[in-house]
Length: 347
Ligand code: NAD
Ligand code: WQD
Image (cartoon, rainbow, N blue to C red; front, side, top):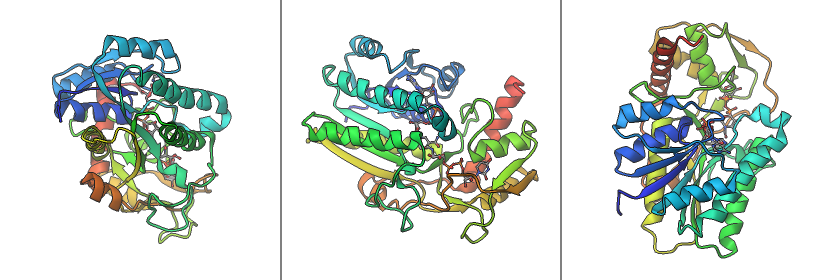
């Protein structure tokens, strides 16, 4: 494998995209980022450079604009693969603005698929989600579990995108696809220079915890303690974003080494361990030394009770395994929050 291959990372200034860009650069890849900055900040590019010594080529373009994609491919005819992170991802917002979600997430994918083949690109990694499983009937959940009706337009876009990719290959297009179903990515880079940067009030648990501890939010609301779980709070499979980032490079390398140029595969990316909301809080309190101000409130509509991954397929086929545990996830999230707020005084 030629490690100087050029890779297009869509959504590369976003949370998972920025961590993956760092790992790609460290492993010798040449990265081009396209991101319309709808949910990320330009300074992340400088942070990527600070960590790796390399500033990737960057396009502030919108993937729903097909001409802009074509322009990138014509300026970089040596792009060999695409890692497609760019999407709108807020579940609640997708319920209020379904058309925005369908337009952005579906059109971006279709445009990339239509433009990549004439540009001679045949490798594609797609960011999917454990959301496609809904509440699985059996735990841990394997890739064979049925896809359940989506609980939100956002979740539906992930299901439809997976279908679009499968149908495109079935229709005879010569492309390789790895669809990676992420469980709950949290944590931040060990440098504390990049991490999750939600705009406004966070929807997800961990940024809400760190923002509460640093004093931006008054208290964390724990959504329900009457679920059928050992401590009554919901269980998720939290995975460190750096472990997740590394899986993308393994998946990319696997495709590029393959003779067959028309294959669709999907993998669960989690740790295989479930933690409850209260266990996550305990881990945070332990590693930060902060007592978190939280209270138990009613269940959040649409939440599933519990899910964690069977990662056997990714372990065996990709030769990848998550290495970092919950304490390291919480420690790095906290270091990032402190470093970012101290540097920017943005609250
Ligand atoms: P993010 O919002 O931090 O990153 C996505 C990036 O894409 C942002 O920087 C945004 O500006 C950009 N973007 C959005 N629409 C675009 C467009 N039309 N053109 C160009 N750029 C555009 O999100 P993330 O957490 O890094 O998630 C990355 C991917 O992983 C998404 O596809 C998301 O659905 C998926 N995913 C995320 C999670 C999670 O909990 N974070 C879980 C499962 C799957
Ligand atoms: C985790 C747990 C909440 C906030 C979402 C998307 C899913 C996927 C990952 C992209 C739950 C509880 C949360 C709070 C709380 N994204 N919680 N108080 O709901 O597992 O999944 O992100 O594909 O599609 O739905 O993640 O971080 O929102 O919640 O008690 O203020 O924390 O009830 O049990 P979730 P989350």
